[in-house]
Figure: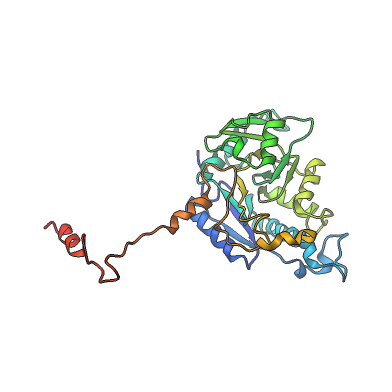
Length: 338
């Protein structure tokens, strides 16, 4: 049960700052390794956003370090992705940020989730609608689906959810502590349980490393959070939390998520501003190759290390190529059948 090169969506959109060609190189290799096709949406610097276009009530005062308002650039970059979806009439898209990792079998993982959302009606607002037509990717009653949250808190009293078996899901004990807590404390699973995914109506997802969005979801997000009716929370993920809790956006969250953060060193390779934790920023801009992720059976970033193996052995002690045993003459003779 697999999906196509855009994981069943019309496009996969990668948000990345134009100067982070190191991360874009990594994503290009990852996409090639797993047969995906990705379109770049350039990131936005806060200082390029005119004060009149910044969301109220956050004007930048003369004595405010613009780096401390980095979230404005992130907000605008995501809004630009929604604009791209609307301008191109895309019915669905997957938005990812450039510090993610995913499993080598991501097509099977997403294909299975797509099938569950299309065929299962136990969580839908209208249970009489038994299933969605196959033309509707990932169901027919959603604005956003979260696939790359860094932490998730389900609704405190509404435990509507669906559990299913996924052979490509890692054991719960391999995930980040916040996901282990969610799975064991809220969903009552054992930390040693493997191959479990849980779908629940989205309530409080933190971080936007990866999320799916429909055309209707893009319109609602651009209206509710974009420049037309600007954001008021300092962070796009906090806006999403507020709007889902208020019921103004809807969709489902997959736990544990199939897209996870690739961490390089310490607090992590990041373009974010640390503020009063600036002393922790000495690891910024370290190589994207020397990191790790948690919660994947087969990390595609880790698999890229295979591209660094030795593919040729040189003969002799600096002498002519072909000297010694197994030289070219013997090989040619064998090929000629002599």
